[in-house]
Image (cartoon, rainbow, N blue to C red; front, side, top):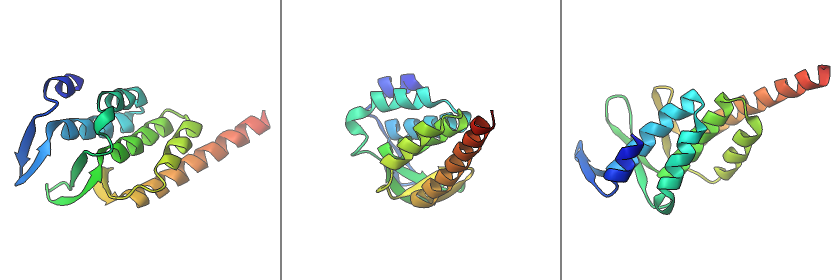
Amino acid sequence: MLKALDGCYDLSANLWGDMEKLRTIVAGELALHAGGRGDFQTIISVEEKLAKDLATDRLLVRDAKCILQGRTKLGDILKYHKARAYQASKMPAEAKNTLKELQFASGKVFVDGNVVGLKDAIAKLQLQVDGKALLYLLRVSWC
């Protein structure tokens, strides 16, 4: 899918009556799946390829029935999924730093089969990261 970012960078598609750039669709899907698998390196590669457009491109966030729920900055979605990937890779310090970068982010995000508010998703992930960091500190202090 990374090849699609190179070959179709400026192409657009009309999906369900809304125009969207293929690069945002591909980047959003890659980030969603890489975040769940803990593959933060793929998300970093996508961020590098789309660096100049992360702040201006918006991803159309749709629910499972393809109903438009909102638009969110592509850079915010990639950062959120990168934090998920760090958390899945047992890298709580990196996850916390990435979540701090999202303190002013807003919009919607598709995660765990549902569309949720980005602020709510960040707060939930922050609790998960803090919990794992606390468990890690307890293990280290017992050793």
